[in-house]
Image 1 (cartoon, rainbow, N blue to C red):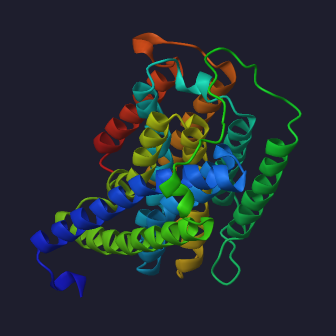
Image 2 (cartoon, rainbow, N blue to C red):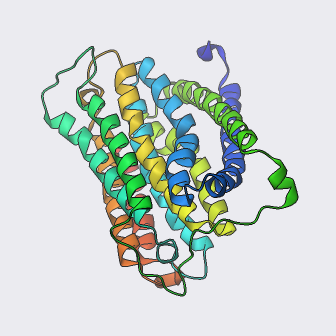
Image 3 (cartoon, helix red, strand yellow):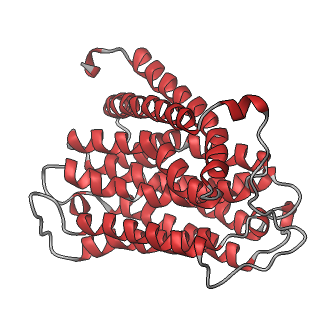
Length: 346
């Protein structure tokens, strides 16, 4: 059906779906912040689990749809390219928080721990690649390991939040996660209604993700652009826009742990794209069907995550241009990765 549409219609569908994702993500931030206060789970947990998973829904739909169509590179690069792009968004958010370095103010052990879990998850595809191309029901065994590591990370992360064995040093610039007073109109909305509204927005984002996957695949065929470039720099960035919107909005609301937790949690959730894509890709192991350009983005995401964790631990107060030195490094690494990808031709 999609090949019957003109290029103009396909482009319009891509942009319209992008707008749906953008505005749905914007609305989700306020809902997540209120749910963090009402449930008592805190901004880092809600940001890392609920908001992170919700804003990643459109991306996982793109990866699954591409894998079902046999486009391994698009499915794979959409996932790992999104992780790199979303990590970059914290550097952008740092620019909007002018008081102090964002990583200093948003001190939270839970976010550091989730970052470590993310690094572990990002190494698993490399293990799959270096292992024999063995599959069970056309699925590589490492795809069964990824959700197990993710689940263990969530349980351990909850323990870190409730019974921390280490705590960050509080300074005058630390922004604590404290519940905000709701106005009368907000209190009138039940927690159930908040969750329901959140669910509707997730559904909209999932539908938009499907439209993006189909239109992007057809546009890639018509323009001759490599799937690795389309996945890492087009669909990944577009489906990651909710993370940018929610992160900047959270920073402007003063919900700093929600901002950092949403990015790290969203990135951790995005590794599940690989498992879902491998299951959906019926021609064998997804990890052996993709090329060096796709694994290049995993290496980039791994490097950026390591730098981010270092920034969260170091907690520099201010760096050049009033943003953290780690933010400058993240911007430089991502820009360099994009340049290398284009010079290599995908």
